[in-house]
Length: 547
Image (cartoon, rainbow, N blue to C red):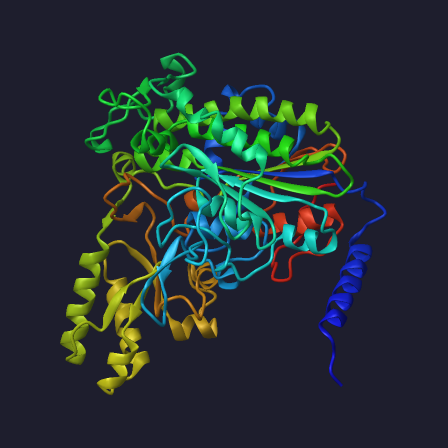
Protein backbone atom coordinates (compact mmCIF):
# COMPACT_ATOMS: atom_id res chain seq x y z
CA UNK A 1 0.00 0.00 0.00
CA UNK A 2 1.30 3.44 -0.89
CA UNK A 3 1.20 5.93 1.99
CA UNK A 4 0.62 9.53 1.00
CA UNK A 5 3.02 12.22 2.32
CA UNK A 6 0.07 13.96 4.03
CA UNK A 7 -0.40 10.84 6.13
CA UNK A 8 3.09 11.28 7.53
CA UNK A 9 2.41 14.94 8.30
CA UNK A 10 -0.84 14.07 10.09
CA UNK A 11 0.87 11.36 12.10
CA UNK A 12 3.64 13.80 13.00
CA UNK A 13 1.14 16.39 14.19
CA UNK A 14 -0.71 13.81 16.33
CA UNK A 15 2.59 12.64 17.80
CA UNK A 16 3.61 16.22 18.58
CA UNK A 17 0.28 16.85 20.32
CA UNK A 18 0.70 13.68 22.37
CA UNK A 19 4.22 14.71 23.37
CA UNK A 20 2.98 18.12 24.39
CA UNK A 21 0.29 16.56 26.59
CA UNK A 22 2.69 14.04 28.12
CA UNK A 23 5.31 16.69 28.92
CA UNK A 24 2.92 19.12 30.56
CA UNK A 25 3.05 18.79 34.32
CA UNK A 26 0.20 19.74 36.67
CA UNK A 27 2.81 20.98 39.16
CA UNK A 28 4.27 23.51 36.71
CA UNK A 29 2.80 26.90 35.88
CA UNK A 30 1.77 27.57 32.28
CA UNK A 31 4.75 27.93 29.91
CA UNK A 32 6.53 31.29 29.82
CA UNK A 33 5.66 33.58 26.94
CA UNK A 34 9.35 34.10 26.21
CA UNK A 35 12.57 32.24 26.95
CA UNK A 36 15.66 34.44 26.68
CA UNK A 37 18.98 32.61 26.41
CA UNK A 38 21.88 34.97 27.12
CA UNK A 39 25.33 33.72 26.11
CA UNK A 40 28.56 35.48 27.02
CA UNK A 41 31.12 34.08 24.61
CA UNK A 42 34.22 32.96 26.51
CA UNK A 43 33.06 33.68 30.07
CA UNK A 44 34.57 31.34 32.69
CA UNK A 45 32.55 30.95 35.87
CA UNK A 46 35.55 32.03 37.92
CA UNK A 47 35.11 35.58 36.65
CA UNK A 48 31.48 35.77 37.76
CA UNK A 49 32.32 34.82 41.35
CA UNK A 50 35.62 36.73 41.50
CA UNK A 51 33.96 40.09 40.77
CA UNK A 52 30.66 39.49 42.55
CA UNK A 53 31.23 42.38 44.94
CA UNK A 54 31.49 44.81 42.00
CA UNK A 55 28.33 43.78 40.15
CA UNK A 56 25.36 46.07 39.60
CA UNK A 57 22.24 45.36 41.70
CA UNK A 58 20.16 43.90 38.87
CA UNK A 59 22.56 42.55 36.24
CA UNK A 60 24.31 39.27 36.95
CA UNK A 61 23.27 39.79 40.57
CA UNK A 62 19.66 39.12 39.52
CA UNK A 63 20.67 35.48 39.04
CA UNK A 64 23.02 35.23 42.02
CA UNK A 65 20.65 36.81 44.53
CA UNK A 66 17.16 36.13 43.16
CA UNK A 67 17.63 33.31 40.68
CA UNK A 68 19.01 29.78 40.57
CA UNK A 69 22.72 29.51 39.93
CA UNK A 70 24.70 26.34 39.48
CA UNK A 71 28.14 26.76 40.97
CA UNK A 72 29.54 23.57 39.44
CA UNK A 73 28.30 23.62 35.84
CA UNK A 74 30.53 22.23 33.11
CA UNK A 75 30.76 21.16 29.50
CA UNK A 76 31.31 17.43 29.20
CA UNK A 77 33.24 17.44 25.92
CA UNK A 78 36.96 17.99 25.44
CA UNK A 79 37.36 20.40 22.51
CA UNK A 80 35.69 23.42 24.06
CA UNK A 81 35.33 25.93 21.23
CA UNK A 82 32.64 28.43 20.24
CA UNK A 83 30.68 26.41 17.69
CA UNK A 84 30.66 23.21 19.73
CA UNK A 85 29.36 25.08 22.77
CA UNK A 86 26.66 26.99 20.91
CA UNK A 87 25.50 23.76 19.24
CA UNK A 88 25.23 22.06 22.63
CA UNK A 89 23.13 24.60 24.54
CA UNK A 90 19.71 24.09 22.96
CA UNK A 91 20.19 20.62 21.44
CA UNK A 92 21.26 19.12 24.76
CA UNK A 93 23.78 17.09 22.77
CA UNK A 94 27.55 17.04 22.50
CA UNK A 95 29.60 17.17 19.27
CA UNK A 96 29.58 13.40 18.81
CA UNK A 97 25.85 13.82 18.14
CA UNK A 98 25.50 17.36 16.77
CA UNK A 99 28.29 16.98 14.21
CA UNK A 100 29.66 20.40 15.18
CA UNK A 101 33.10 19.11 16.17
CA UNK A 102 34.82 22.49 16.00
CA UNK A 103 34.58 25.93 14.49
CA UNK A 104 36.01 24.36 11.34
CA UNK A 105 37.40 21.05 10.18
CA UNK A 106 38.42 19.20 7.01
CA UNK A 107 35.86 17.23 5.05
CA UNK A 108 36.93 13.56 5.36
CA UNK A 109 36.10 12.82 1.71
CA UNK A 110 37.30 15.93 -0.13
CA UNK A 111 39.89 17.12 2.43
CA UNK A 112 38.54 20.64 1.86
CA UNK A 113 38.01 23.10 4.73
CA UNK A 114 34.53 23.00 6.25
CA UNK A 115 33.16 25.85 8.35
CA UNK A 116 30.65 24.93 11.03
CA UNK A 117 27.84 27.08 9.59
CA UNK A 118 29.17 27.39 6.06
CA UNK A 119 26.75 26.70 3.21
CA UNK A 120 27.59 28.02 -0.27
CA UNK A 121 23.97 27.61 -1.37
CA UNK A 122 23.08 30.71 0.66
CA UNK A 123 24.34 34.28 0.98
CA UNK A 124 24.06 37.15 3.43
CA UNK A 125 21.23 39.52 2.61
CA UNK A 126 22.67 42.74 1.23
CA UNK A 127 26.27 41.83 2.06
CA UNK A 128 29.22 40.19 0.37
CA UNK A 129 29.51 36.51 1.22
CA UNK A 130 32.74 34.51 1.13
CA UNK A 131 32.79 30.73 0.54
CA UNK A 132 33.44 29.84 4.20
CA UNK A 133 31.10 32.41 5.74
CA UNK A 134 28.38 31.12 8.02
CA UNK A 135 24.97 31.24 6.36
CA UNK A 136 22.92 28.23 7.53
CA UNK A 137 22.60 25.39 10.09
CA UNK A 138 23.14 22.76 7.39
CA UNK A 139 25.99 21.07 9.29
CA UNK A 140 24.01 20.81 12.54
CA UNK A 141 22.80 17.22 12.85
CA UNK A 142 20.58 17.63 15.92
CA UNK A 143 17.32 19.46 16.52
CA UNK A 144 17.01 22.23 19.10
CA UNK A 145 14.41 23.12 21.70
CA UNK A 146 13.17 25.74 19.25
CA UNK A 147 12.79 23.18 16.48
CA UNK A 148 10.62 21.00 18.74
CA UNK A 149 8.64 24.01 19.93
CA UNK A 150 7.89 25.20 16.40
CA UNK A 151 6.89 21.70 15.33
CA UNK A 152 4.31 21.65 18.11
CA UNK A 153 3.32 25.29 17.76
CA UNK A 154 4.24 26.88 14.40
CA UNK A 155 3.16 30.29 15.71
CA UNK A 156 6.12 30.32 18.11
CA UNK A 157 9.06 32.44 17.00
CA UNK A 158 12.70 31.50 17.50
CA UNK A 159 15.33 34.19 16.95
CA UNK A 160 19.12 33.92 17.28
CA UNK A 161 21.30 37.06 17.42
CA UNK A 162 25.07 37.31 17.80
CA UNK A 163 28.24 39.13 16.93
CA UNK A 164 29.34 35.84 15.31
CA UNK A 165 27.43 33.88 12.68
CA UNK A 166 27.89 30.61 14.58
CA UNK A 167 26.67 32.22 17.79
CA UNK A 168 23.39 33.16 16.07
CA UNK A 169 22.81 30.24 13.69
CA UNK A 170 23.42 27.22 15.92
CA UNK A 171 21.10 28.12 18.84
CA UNK A 172 18.41 29.18 16.33
CA UNK A 173 18.40 25.63 14.97
CA UNK A 174 16.87 24.50 11.69
CA UNK A 175 13.57 26.38 11.93
CA UNK A 176 14.46 29.60 13.74
CA UNK A 177 15.89 32.79 12.24
CA UNK A 178 19.44 34.03 12.76
CA UNK A 179 20.87 37.54 12.54
CA UNK A 180 24.60 38.28 12.83
CA UNK A 181 26.82 41.32 13.02
CA UNK A 182 28.54 42.24 9.77
CA UNK A 183 32.11 43.39 10.36
CA UNK A 184 32.25 45.10 6.98
CA UNK A 185 29.36 47.46 7.65
CA UNK A 186 28.48 47.44 11.36
CA UNK A 187 24.98 46.21 10.45
CA UNK A 188 23.08 43.04 11.34
CA UNK A 189 22.02 40.68 8.57
CA UNK A 190 20.40 37.32 8.04
CA UNK A 191 20.91 35.00 5.07
CA UNK A 192 18.87 33.65 2.20
CA UNK A 193 18.50 30.36 4.08
CA UNK A 194 15.95 32.14 6.25
CA UNK A 195 14.31 34.71 3.95
CA UNK A 196 14.77 36.54 0.64
CA UNK A 197 14.75 40.00 2.24
CA UNK A 198 14.84 41.50 5.72
CA UNK A 199 11.66 42.58 7.48
CA UNK A 200 11.11 46.30 7.86
CA UNK A 201 12.29 46.51 11.46
CA UNK A 202 15.75 45.17 10.46
CA UNK A 203 16.08 47.66 7.63
CA UNK A 204 15.03 50.47 9.96
CA UNK A 205 17.60 49.45 12.56
CA UNK A 206 20.41 49.30 10.00
CA UNK A 207 19.38 52.56 8.36
CA UNK A 208 20.10 54.34 11.63
CA UNK A 209 23.78 53.30 11.42
CA UNK A 210 23.97 52.65 15.16
CA UNK A 211 27.56 51.34 14.99
CA UNK A 212 28.78 54.73 13.80
CA UNK A 213 27.89 56.38 17.09
CA UNK A 214 30.95 54.81 18.73
CA UNK A 215 33.44 56.16 16.19
CA UNK A 216 36.21 58.00 18.06
CA UNK A 217 34.57 57.01 21.35
CA UNK A 218 36.81 55.80 24.16
CA UNK A 219 36.34 52.59 26.09
CA UNK A 220 36.96 53.87 29.61
CA UNK A 221 37.24 51.85 32.81
CA UNK A 222 34.05 51.91 34.88
CA UNK A 223 35.77 51.92 38.27
CA UNK A 224 38.80 53.65 39.83
CA UNK A 225 42.14 51.99 39.10
CA UNK A 226 42.40 50.53 42.61
CA UNK A 227 39.28 48.43 41.98
CA UNK A 228 41.21 46.35 39.44
CA UNK A 229 44.02 45.33 41.78
CA UNK A 230 43.00 41.66 41.50
CA UNK A 231 43.57 41.73 37.70
CA UNK A 232 46.69 41.81 35.52
CA UNK A 233 47.56 45.45 34.69
CA UNK A 234 47.37 46.85 31.16
CA UNK A 235 50.25 46.96 28.67
CA UNK A 236 51.84 43.60 29.44
CA UNK A 237 54.84 42.77 27.19
CA UNK A 238 53.13 39.62 25.96
CA UNK A 239 50.13 41.61 24.65
CA UNK A 240 52.18 42.05 21.47
CA UNK A 241 52.54 45.01 19.10
CA UNK A 242 48.83 45.86 19.27
CA UNK A 243 49.16 46.48 22.99
CA UNK A 244 46.19 46.89 25.28
CA UNK A 245 45.42 49.78 27.60
CA UNK A 246 42.39 51.68 28.87
CA UNK A 247 41.15 54.15 27.85
CA UNK A 248 41.05 52.77 24.29
CA UNK A 249 39.74 54.72 21.31
CA UNK A 250 37.45 53.11 18.75
CA UNK A 251 38.80 53.95 15.30
CA UNK A 252 42.51 54.50 14.81
CA UNK A 253 43.61 58.15 14.64
CA UNK A 254 44.27 57.92 10.89
CA UNK A 255 40.66 56.98 10.10
CA UNK A 256 38.48 59.91 9.06
CA UNK A 257 35.24 57.89 8.92
CA UNK A 258 33.93 54.48 9.98
CA UNK A 259 35.04 51.58 7.79
CA UNK A 260 35.63 47.81 7.95
CA UNK A 261 38.67 48.08 10.23
CA UNK A 262 36.67 50.13 12.72
CA UNK A 263 33.56 47.91 12.54
CA UNK A 264 35.62 44.77 13.12
CA UNK A 265 37.56 46.39 15.97
CA UNK A 266 34.28 47.11 17.78
CA UNK A 267 34.01 43.38 18.44
CA UNK A 268 37.02 43.67 20.74
CA UNK A 269 35.24 46.15 23.04
CA UNK A 270 31.96 46.56 24.95
CA UNK A 271 30.39 48.48 22.07
CA UNK A 272 29.56 45.59 19.72
CA UNK A 273 27.82 43.91 22.65
CA UNK A 274 25.79 47.09 23.24
CA UNK A 275 24.83 47.01 19.55
CA UNK A 276 23.82 43.34 19.82
CA UNK A 277 21.54 44.08 22.76
CA UNK A 278 20.05 47.05 20.93
CA UNK A 279 19.31 44.78 17.98
CA UNK A 280 17.74 42.28 20.38
CA UNK A 281 15.48 45.05 21.69
CA UNK A 282 14.51 45.82 18.09
CA UNK A 283 13.76 42.13 17.48
CA UNK A 284 11.53 41.91 20.56
CA UNK A 285 9.55 44.91 19.33
CA UNK A 286 9.60 44.04 15.62
CA UNK A 287 8.67 40.38 16.06
CA UNK A 288 6.38 41.04 19.06
CA UNK A 289 8.20 38.39 21.08
CA UNK A 290 6.48 37.30 24.25
CA UNK A 291 3.25 39.09 23.37
CA UNK A 292 0.90 36.14 22.98
CA UNK A 293 0.29 32.64 24.32
CA UNK A 294 2.57 30.96 21.76
CA UNK A 295 5.93 30.75 23.59
CA UNK A 296 8.91 32.33 21.84
CA UNK A 297 12.67 31.83 22.20
CA UNK A 298 15.26 34.59 21.85
CA UNK A 299 18.95 33.65 21.93
CA UNK A 300 21.42 36.51 22.29
CA UNK A 301 25.11 35.66 22.15
CA UNK A 302 27.49 38.48 23.07
CA UNK A 303 30.81 37.95 21.34
CA UNK A 304 33.01 40.71 22.75
CA UNK A 305 34.27 38.90 25.82
CA UNK A 306 35.80 36.17 23.69
CA UNK A 307 37.68 38.68 21.54
CA UNK A 308 38.87 40.56 24.63
CA UNK A 309 40.07 37.38 26.34
CA UNK A 310 41.87 36.11 23.25
CA UNK A 311 43.73 39.41 22.99
CA UNK A 312 44.51 40.11 26.65
CA UNK A 313 43.38 37.07 28.74
CA UNK A 314 40.55 36.62 31.22
CA UNK A 315 42.93 37.66 33.99
CA UNK A 316 43.55 41.12 32.50
CA UNK A 317 42.11 44.42 33.66
CA UNK A 318 40.55 44.81 30.21
CA UNK A 319 38.60 41.56 30.62
CA UNK A 320 37.69 42.47 34.20
CA UNK A 321 36.27 45.80 33.07
CA UNK A 322 34.59 44.27 30.02
CA UNK A 323 32.60 41.93 32.27
CA UNK A 324 31.56 44.85 34.48
CA UNK A 325 30.47 46.75 31.37
CA UNK A 326 28.39 43.74 30.28
CA UNK A 327 26.88 43.51 33.74
CA UNK A 328 25.57 47.09 33.50
CA UNK A 329 24.21 46.35 30.03
CA UNK A 330 22.40 43.30 31.41
CA UNK A 331 20.80 45.40 34.11
CA UNK A 332 19.33 47.78 31.53
CA UNK A 333 18.27 44.95 29.20
CA UNK A 334 16.59 42.94 31.97
CA UNK A 335 14.62 45.99 33.08
CA UNK A 336 13.50 46.53 29.50
CA UNK A 337 12.30 42.93 29.42
CA UNK A 338 10.37 43.53 32.64
CA UNK A 339 8.59 46.49 31.05
CA UNK A 340 8.02 45.15 27.53
CA UNK A 341 7.32 41.45 28.19
CA UNK A 342 6.28 41.57 31.85
CA UNK A 343 8.13 40.42 34.94
CA UNK A 344 6.21 37.16 35.25
CA UNK A 345 6.06 36.29 31.56
CA UNK A 346 9.60 35.26 30.72
CA UNK A 347 12.52 33.10 31.80
CA UNK A 348 16.17 34.15 31.59
CA UNK A 349 19.03 31.69 31.16
CA UNK A 350 22.66 32.83 31.07
CA UNK A 351 25.59 30.63 30.13
CA UNK A 352 28.80 30.61 28.07
CA UNK A 353 30.05 28.52 25.18
CA UNK A 354 33.37 27.81 26.92
CA UNK A 355 35.69 29.21 29.54
CA UNK A 356 39.24 30.45 28.99
CA UNK A 357 42.73 29.37 29.92
CA UNK A 358 45.08 31.90 31.52
CA UNK A 359 47.77 33.19 29.19
CA UNK A 360 50.84 30.94 29.33
CA UNK A 361 52.96 33.89 30.48
CA UNK A 362 50.57 34.57 33.36
CA UNK A 363 50.62 30.89 34.33
CA UNK A 364 54.40 30.76 34.18
CA UNK A 365 54.56 33.79 36.46
CA UNK A 366 52.49 31.77 38.96
CA UNK A 367 54.94 28.87 38.78
CA UNK A 368 52.82 26.69 36.48
CA UNK A 369 54.32 24.50 33.77
CA UNK A 370 52.84 26.21 30.73
CA UNK A 371 53.70 26.79 27.10
CA UNK A 372 52.74 26.93 23.45
CA UNK A 373 52.79 23.97 21.08
CA UNK A 374 53.28 24.61 17.37
CA UNK A 375 50.87 22.50 15.32
CA UNK A 376 52.96 22.62 12.13
CA UNK A 377 56.15 21.68 13.95
CA UNK A 378 54.36 18.89 15.79
CA UNK A 379 53.05 17.45 12.52
CA UNK A 380 56.53 17.65 11.03
CA UNK A 381 58.08 15.72 13.92
CA UNK A 382 55.34 13.08 13.89
CA UNK A 383 55.68 12.55 10.13
CA UNK A 384 59.47 12.32 10.33
CA UNK A 385 59.26 9.64 13.01
CA UNK A 386 56.52 7.72 11.15
CA UNK A 387 58.62 7.76 8.00
CA UNK A 388 61.56 6.38 9.93
CA UNK A 389 59.40 3.57 11.34
CA UNK A 390 57.31 2.68 8.26
CA UNK A 391 59.44 3.96 5.38
CA UNK A 392 56.67 6.18 3.95
CA UNK A 393 56.72 10.00 4.03
CA UNK A 394 53.77 12.22 5.09
CA UNK A 395 51.52 9.59 6.61
CA UNK A 396 49.92 12.35 8.65
CA UNK A 397 47.94 14.81 6.52
CA UNK A 398 46.93 17.59 8.91
CA UNK A 399 45.24 18.38 12.21
CA UNK A 400 41.47 18.83 12.12
CA UNK A 401 39.35 19.79 15.15
CA UNK A 402 41.84 18.52 17.75
CA UNK A 403 42.67 15.32 15.89
CA UNK A 404 45.40 14.09 13.57
CA UNK A 405 44.13 12.90 10.18
CA UNK A 406 46.11 10.08 8.63
CA UNK A 407 46.40 9.45 4.89
CA UNK A 408 44.28 6.30 4.65
CA UNK A 409 44.73 5.97 0.89
CA UNK A 410 48.51 6.11 1.15
CA UNK A 411 48.52 3.69 4.07
CA UNK A 412 46.44 1.21 2.04
CA UNK A 413 48.56 1.69 -1.11
CA UNK A 414 51.72 0.87 0.79
CA UNK A 415 50.16 -2.19 2.42
CA UNK A 416 50.49 -0.83 5.96
CA UNK A 417 48.22 -1.79 8.81
CA UNK A 418 46.12 1.29 9.59
CA UNK A 419 45.82 0.56 13.32
CA UNK A 420 49.58 0.08 13.60
CA UNK A 421 50.21 3.49 12.03
CA UNK A 422 47.56 5.09 14.24
CA UNK A 423 49.02 3.50 17.38
CA UNK A 424 52.47 4.75 16.44
CA UNK A 425 51.15 8.25 15.78
CA UNK A 426 49.41 8.22 19.15
CA UNK A 427 52.64 7.38 20.95
CA UNK A 428 54.49 10.11 19.07
CA UNK A 429 51.87 12.70 20.04
CA UNK A 430 52.11 11.67 23.67
CA UNK A 431 55.86 12.32 23.52
CA UNK A 432 55.24 15.99 22.63
CA UNK A 433 55.75 18.43 25.51
CA UNK A 434 52.23 19.90 25.47
CA UNK A 435 50.08 16.80 24.79
CA UNK A 436 48.25 15.28 27.76
CA UNK A 437 46.22 12.52 26.09
CA UNK A 438 45.78 10.94 22.67
CA UNK A 439 43.53 8.11 21.52
CA UNK A 440 43.06 6.34 18.22
CA UNK A 441 39.94 5.97 16.13
CA UNK A 442 39.69 2.33 17.18
CA UNK A 443 39.88 3.20 20.88
CA UNK A 444 37.33 5.98 20.61
CA UNK A 445 34.89 3.93 18.55
CA UNK A 446 35.09 1.02 20.99
CA UNK A 447 34.95 3.37 24.01
CA UNK A 448 37.57 1.05 25.45
CA UNK A 449 39.40 3.36 27.87
CA UNK A 450 36.64 5.14 29.76
CA UNK A 451 38.63 5.06 32.99
CA UNK A 452 41.53 7.02 31.47
CA UNK A 453 41.85 10.76 32.13
CA UNK A 454 39.90 12.86 29.60
CA UNK A 455 38.83 9.82 27.55
CA UNK A 456 35.10 10.22 28.23
CA UNK A 457 35.29 13.93 27.35
CA UNK A 458 37.19 13.14 24.17
CA UNK A 459 34.60 10.57 23.02
CA UNK A 460 31.99 13.34 23.23
CA UNK A 461 34.09 15.58 20.98
CA UNK A 462 34.87 12.83 18.45
CA UNK A 463 32.42 12.13 15.60
CA UNK A 464 33.10 8.91 13.69
CA UNK A 465 32.12 10.36 10.31
CA UNK A 466 33.80 13.75 10.65
CA UNK A 467 36.73 13.59 13.05
CA UNK A 468 40.29 12.47 12.48
CA UNK A 469 42.15 9.33 13.42
CA UNK A 470 44.04 10.28 16.59
CA UNK A 471 42.20 12.67 18.90
CA UNK A 472 44.41 14.61 21.31
CA UNK A 473 44.08 16.95 24.30
CA UNK A 474 46.65 19.42 25.58
CA UNK A 475 48.18 19.52 29.03
CA UNK A 476 46.91 22.13 31.50
CA UNK A 477 48.08 25.68 30.69
CA UNK A 478 49.34 24.69 27.22
CA UNK A 479 47.92 25.97 23.94
CA UNK A 480 48.48 25.48 20.25
CA UNK A 481 50.16 28.57 18.81
CA UNK A 482 48.11 31.19 16.99
CA UNK A 483 49.25 34.33 15.23
CA UNK A 484 46.35 36.37 16.56
CA UNK A 485 45.72 35.14 20.10
CA UNK A 486 47.65 35.57 23.31
CA UNK A 487 45.56 32.89 24.93
CA UNK A 488 42.70 30.60 24.00
CA UNK A 489 40.39 27.74 25.00
CA UNK A 490 39.60 24.29 23.64
CA UNK A 491 40.79 21.91 26.35
CA UNK A 492 39.05 19.45 28.71
CA UNK A 493 40.44 21.27 31.76
CA UNK A 494 38.30 23.02 34.35
CA UNK A 495 39.24 26.54 33.29
CA UNK A 496 37.69 25.78 29.87
CA UNK A 497 34.73 23.61 30.92
CA UNK A 498 33.49 25.49 34.03
CA UNK A 499 30.94 28.05 32.85
CA UNK A 500 27.93 29.87 34.29
CA UNK A 501 24.52 28.22 34.23
CA UNK A 502 22.22 30.84 35.74
CA UNK A 503 18.42 30.98 35.58
CA UNK A 504 15.81 33.54 36.57
CA UNK A 505 12.02 33.39 36.46
CA UNK A 506 10.35 33.46 39.89
CA UNK A 507 7.14 31.81 38.68
CA UNK A 508 9.07 28.73 37.51
CA UNK A 509 12.43 28.73 39.28
CA UNK A 510 13.26 28.50 42.98
CA UNK A 511 16.15 30.86 43.80
CA UNK A 512 19.37 29.72 45.41
CA UNK A 513 22.82 28.30 44.87
CA UNK A 514 23.11 24.66 43.73
CA UNK A 515 26.45 22.95 44.27
CA UNK A 516 25.84 19.59 42.59
CA UNK A 517 27.63 19.09 39.29
CA UNK A 518 25.46 19.77 36.26
CA UNK A 519 26.27 20.06 32.57
CA UNK A 520 25.32 22.50 29.85
CA UNK A 521 23.42 19.70 28.06
CA UNK A 522 20.95 19.91 30.95
CA UNK A 523 19.70 23.32 29.78
CA UNK A 524 17.78 21.95 26.78
CA UNK A 525 15.67 19.35 28.60
CA UNK A 526 15.06 21.89 31.37
CA UNK A 527 13.66 24.47 28.98
CA UNK A 528 11.70 21.79 27.14
CA UNK A 529 10.01 20.81 30.38
CA UNK A 530 9.18 24.41 31.23
CA UNK A 531 7.78 24.94 27.73
CA UNK A 532 5.74 21.74 27.91
CA UNK A 533 7.36 20.03 24.93
CA UNK A 534 9.52 16.97 24.43
CA UNK A 535 13.27 17.32 24.79
CA UNK A 536 15.23 17.41 21.50
CA UNK A 537 15.57 13.90 20.12
CA UNK A 538 19.37 13.65 20.54
CA UNK A 539 19.50 15.35 23.94
CA UNK A 540 21.66 13.57 26.49
CA UNK A 541 21.07 15.88 29.46
CA UNK A 542 18.66 15.75 32.40
CA UNK A 543 16.36 18.50 33.64
CA UNK A 544 17.93 20.78 36.24
CA UNK A 545 16.45 20.83 39.77
CA UNK A 546 14.55 24.13 39.76
CA UNK A 547 11.70 23.75 42.27
